[in-house]
Image (tube, rainbow, N blue to C red; front, top):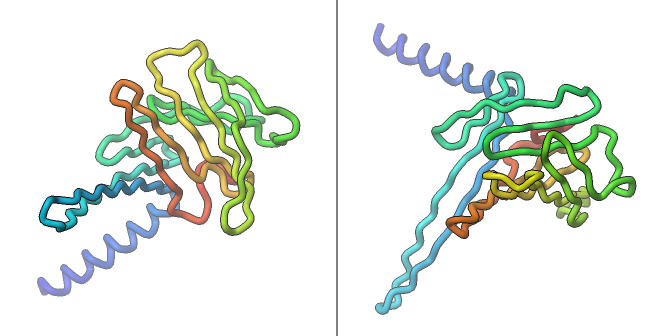
Length: 175
């Protein structure tokens, strides 16, 4: 009887995980550091941190910490505003039309357009608070077909940055 309950519990948890996975966009940052010691042995240290965005519940999970985010009031814009990740872009935005825009006290500047290994155009957009406030600047990697495919958090006081990449076929803000 106990074995049956354990099997049912495992199946339920597996099913629940599959259901919840559809509501989240997952991003991961993996940092590797190598220390070469005097005895020529290499010490490798890898750390990983995750960010998950639940569009339906308007929650960003940053490792073990969760925070609410806000969206735009206008249906013409795609927006996310939180304590750390901020981004806004018109849903019908064309890179030839505007390279700089502002929304909700943030300024957005198109820095560069690149192509990924699949030929997908990725737009690199700098985000700063306007006027500059406590918020550190960030960079967002955006694709018109995949949404937010990556972002960089800068921690100016610590002189550190952390880059997160999309782990799913489509990201937050995808059509």
